[in-house]
Image 1: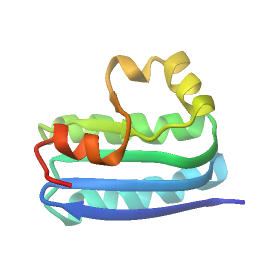
Image 2 (image 1 turned 90 degrees about the vertical axis):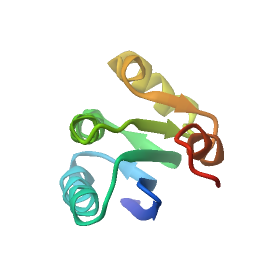
Image 3 (image 1 turned 60 degrees about the horizontal axis):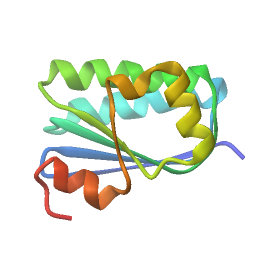
Image 4 (image 1 turned 180 degrees about the vertical axis):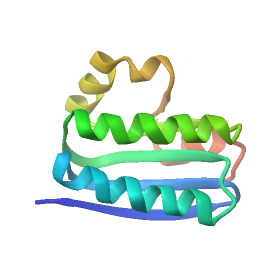
Length: 117
């Protein structure tokens, strides 16, 4: 199936919406696109919407963790939202939820970052 990604900027928030499979085949391309978006626009926070992700492996976790570190350096925060049960388990096992906040949906995530949805 592959991975599709869309990026939207609202104020200083980059919204990353993914759908499909985030595996080692898709990770490098996603990382490059995501980094380009972060540094070509004025970004402080990131919302990662995983509603339509059907599979993720350790390569996907690596991409998320790398962008988390970059957002932190910008003085911002990363919020994950709309996560499926299987991907949520992966995040829990990897310990990502100890550093990345989870919100129910994109609207709540935007609100918590001070952006009206």
